[in-house]
Amino acid sequence: MVIITLQRDKCIGCNYCVEMAPVQFQMSKKDGKSVLIHSQNAKGFYTLKSHDHTIVENCELAAKACPIKIISIKET
Image (cartoon, rainbow, N blue to C red; front, top):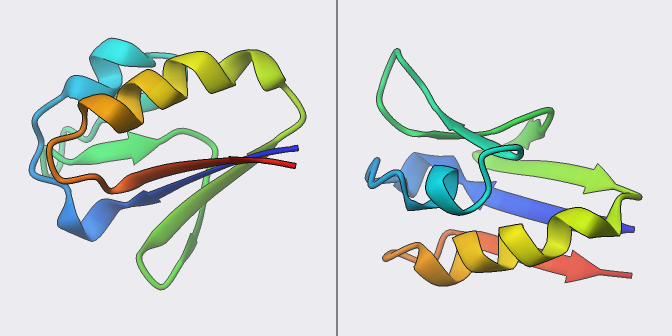
């Protein structure tokens, strides 16, 4: 299981996550912040749980590129 979490409220809209992992992230047209596709919101933490381990590499690149470090990835 792969668990990706985005603290969307802290997003500054730099677009690096979309550049690194366009399948998992997109920019909102409403507020210009990042959206973790197919995620569930729990108090500002958007979480995606997936059995697809092929997404890890791109999501790790997105997490490293994020200037405010609001993306986390866990593998179980």
